Length: 282
Image (cartoon, rainbow, N blue to C red; front, side, top):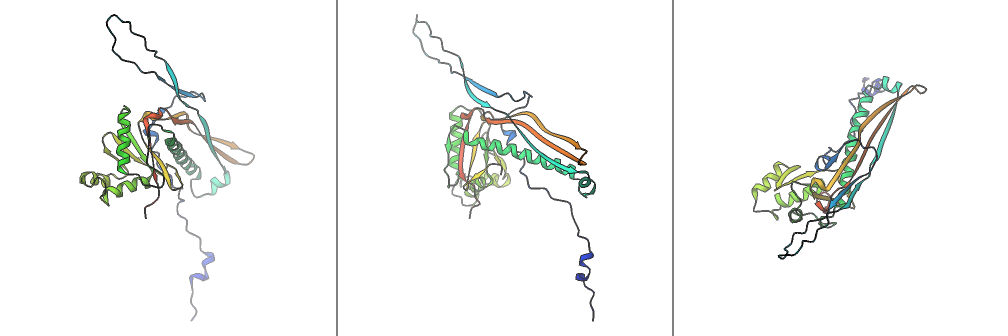
């Protein structure tokens, strides 16, 4: 008996294509936790200064008070840079591609630039000077978190505070409190809150936790931070920009994308570094 099989016609059957998937991108989370400047001032550096402190003291009857110098000293500088990318699409590609490739390019670029900005802000955590807690190759603990909160409070840094951590740093904290019971085991309401508001939660007075994969991992470790919004800054000089440009000789469309911004520490003593393992626990 002769069978008619799919293999006999396989070469004649068209492939079935679904919509194209985008590269996975992290949500833009850190920009909203820092000080933001967005007036268009070109590429001039932005500088912060700090006043000297007052000197309140007793003085004896009949004495003259010695004046306190009230001057400013340089504190930090934000130096902007231009960041860009480009895609060239031929007319034939645009006309033939079953996907709306021009719109898809714009969508991907927007997500890529947003993730890039968050990664730049996260890279500034290592430059905070308000304290350093945790060690490489060891898990962060709730003791580190509480001490960071105490350091900021003692330094008279005004709340609110943000605590930004890598997902695996956060996971180890959650497991230590909710699973092993070795920390905060007498606070079941705290454990319930950890589970119900896993990724962004206000668990300690004045502290909002932000969990983001934009924090870089180096040799299995990450540097997170607890900080006031004044500790770090994002200075946007020109917003995310798309400029199409025709190339008639090639029958192509050039899509130019750019963003001008600066980033860095603004008042570095208002943030505490939190170093710890950023690997999936065994």
